[in-house]
Image (cartoon, rainbow over all chains, first blue to last red; front, side):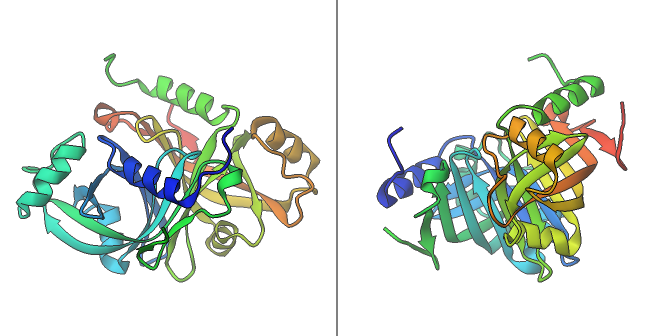
Amino acid sequence: MTGPRDAATRKADTLRMWATPEIDVWVATASPEGEAHLVPLSLAWVEERFVVALQASARTARDLRANGRARLAVGPTRDVTMIDAVLEREVPVSEDAGLGVAYAAQADWDPRGSDGYVFLVLRPERVQAWREADEIAGRTVMRRRSWLV
Amino acid sequence: MTGPRDAATRKADTLRMWATPEIDVWVATASPEGEAHLVPLSLAWVEERFVVALQASARTARDLRANGRARLAVGPTRDVTMIDAVLEREVPVSEDAGLGVAYAAQADWDPRGSDGYVFLVLRPERVQAWREADEIAGRTVMRRRSWLV
């Protein structure tokens, strides 16, 4: 054991994790009827935003369009980053070339050319990072869209 | 590659995963205001129910009490089981000795004696299990509380 990580280390580990090739994100949303949904999706971290690609008609896309917010998790349960995020924009996968290149470079598949797929671009507002119980204190590393270190 | 697993193998793998010592569950809930929440919690699989222990005042407990439903995930994103579950009962951790023993035997901590903690007992209604894209077809292994194999 090396004890809990300091804030700067947690931020650095968090950013490294989000940029990992072929990493996934858990996306939790709520429907207008108040039902929770949860799916794993391939993640790209592009210009300080989370980018996922999915069918425009998928439940997660519909929930995000309706209420604009999601709760995300990246990493395993014992080395986790939890993110409260807002939907910043939505664009068909063929209509933003830069985003398509960036997404395909990190994710393990390329949605460009898949009919009906969109990119959802999510901005983190609050981020928490912890591994074990000794890191619960000090787990908030971003608040109101600002890194605390 | 061995190709997609058949239904019986998925069910067996799923039950084995849920009974793994020190495994966690992602719990997604929605608040009465329609906000999604998501947390990782230590899991016990007891008498065909998911059991988690948390503070009675925790957001996840409040959401479940209010609307009775959660969406759960157990396993990594590329070997996942997704569960739609309903809250069957809630009991203070000191008031159900059998549940306390069973929970502590599987989880990596023992909540008995922690003031204000409750067990939430969740019953699965629908379960999906898949690893990679080749397993999306046939991923539903339980529907309306019944295993399909």
